[in-house]
Amino acid sequence: MNNVLKKLKLLPSDPGIYYFKNKQKKIIYIGKAANLRNRVNSYFYHNSSANNKLDKMIPEIDDLVWRTTVSEVEALIEESKEIKKISLFIIF
Image 1 (tube, one colour):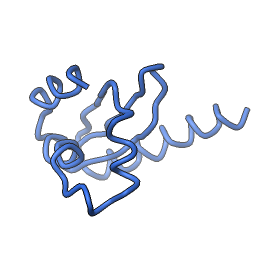
Image 2: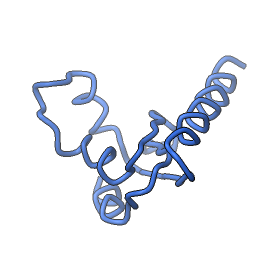
Image 3: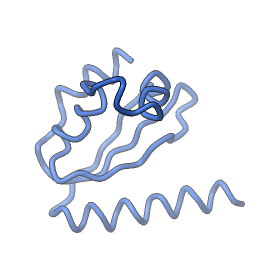
């Protein structure tokens, strides 16, 4: 988790997609953001009683990877592509 907290400081304010990985380096979540810094930080500084699913995921996050995009729309498209790639990998 220390690695993730250090990376939070490096996040740009640009639009993009982000990946949370567990200790086994498997992607456990893919998301998109109009502002990567604001969106990703919101996971780590949220009201813990507000989202039980989120409370379970946060301790599993061991790494954070992101990729900036030109626009929020491009982030949406890229997120969709990445989720489909991961889904196909899991199915087959």
